[in-house]
Structures are given as C-alpha cells and as structure tokens.
Length: 363
Image (cartoon, rainbow, N blue to C red):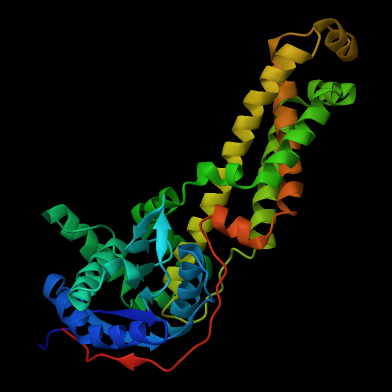
C-alpha cells in the first residue's frame, strides 16, 4: 500500500515592494528546505507576495492586522510580513514579532543590519514560524511534540467539512489547550484598562448608582436570582457591544481557513468575556468599598425599611457593579474600532494585493 502524503502547511511571505520583496523571493526555497529539515512530519509550501499592506508610519499591530487579512484571503496557514518599517519596544529595535493568536509574524528588516542579511533573515524567519506553531526553539522532545501537533492541526484536515455546531464543538474539544494558550496570549484581564472611555463610563455609572436610594431598594428587593440575571446580562451586553461594534468577529472565507477562523473567533469571544468579567469583579470590589464607606447606615436602613447588614451591602455592590458594567458598554461604544481591536489584541486589516511568487514544494 502506498504511503499517504504528509499534510501540507502553507506559509506566506508578505513583503513590501523593493528590497524586502527581493529578499522574500530569495528566501522561499531556503525557508521551505530548512523547515522541512526541522519538521519533516508535514510538507512545507512557501509563497512570497509583494504587498505594501499599510502606509508608514505603522506599528506592528497594523502590520499584523493587514497580514492577517492577506492570510485569510489567500488560504495560508501561517504568514510572515517582511517590512522596511523599523519597529521599536521601549526605544529598542525589534527584529521580529510573532502573534500565534493570528498565525502571523512580522520581521523588521532594518533591525537585521547590513551584514549577512539573508542568512539572518532566514534564521529569524524559521524561529518566527516555530513560534507561530506553538513555541520557540524546540530544545527538547516535549517542545518538538507540541510543535508537531500544532502543525498537523494547521494542515488541511478532511474532517473539517463537518457542519455547524458539531464542527465548532469538535474544534473546541480537540484544540482546547491551544485555545487556552491563545486566550492567555491576549491578556484578557487587561482589556478594560486599555479602554479608557469604557472604564470612565463604568465608574461614572457606578458612582451614580451608589448615591441613588432607589438603587438601594432595588438591590434589597431583587434577591440572588434576579441579581445573577442582571449580572450575566450586563456581561453579555458589554461583550456583544465590544465584539459587534469593533467587528472583532471574523467570517470564514474558505474551507481551508475554517478551523483557524473558528479558533480565532472562540479565542476572541473568550478574551472579551474574561475581560468583561474581570471588569465586573473589579467594579464589585470598588462598589463594596464605596457602599461600606460612603453609604451611611441610618440612611441605608431607613431606605430599606429594616436594619442594614453586610448582606445588604453585598447585594448593593452586586447590583451597582452590574449597572456600572453596562455603563462600561456605553463607554465602549465611544471607543474607536482601532482602540478596541488593539485592546483585544485584534487589529484592522487592509492593503493591496499582488500575484504570488511560489517556491517549489518541499518534503
């Protein structure tokens, strides 16, 4: 019986016109050969395209977003952007930046220097592709096994034709560890801090609710079930506002990219929900402190019609944090789409296309 052909992983090199495009075309065969030597469990297909993507000045966030859009249009599995734009972090030059969540990396050519540029570009690109596949340099068997699993997940899978909820459930259960890693890379707990208008709206709504006697009475009358419903509703409303308002949800453009887009959307939804839950928890703590310090017990008891205790303060803080979260959703509506995408580690795509130059398939 003939051996089955190994699954194919397609890597796209997107390069700015000029020297970057020339370097990308020259790297195709060498990159495919080097990746095949290090990871023979899959066949490698490397393409190079000339595309300006964004107009400088631009940062790595814009480049990642534009490259991600090109990856989806071309049905690639991974993509590396070769750019002439110098990138910096804390005033230090950045050679490369990998975003496993997006399946995209950026290589800044100015940081490579003038000596042995092609060799350094090849070494750095191989490292970036390995980072996208699940880790850095494969120093031990566990690292290699993790990268191998990720590469096989990226490659074309005939079972991906499963429709609807069954497909999403299979992707979720079969790639749970990878999904957790993608969400963790997004740092969802920092979402609200990055959205100043949303945070301002949440605090303003919380302060207003804290000094309103009618809110005190509602918190006392609602009970645990209604307070839970209000809390869940506030989190869902805020998460949906962020996802829909900033167009964070990606559409499936082809069968090949379906699994990757599904994972990306699941990671985005989880990132936003966890971020909003973190905001809700922080607001609860602040509301409880405010209720204990600012709400005078005699007035609180008079408004409730019975002596106020710690449970009443907890119920008040619970309702105030939910209302404040809704205020955060209103504030998020005033944020620019770019701000929300950057906060959620998702960026606006853009750029023009050009015909690809393909290397010979390796493996």
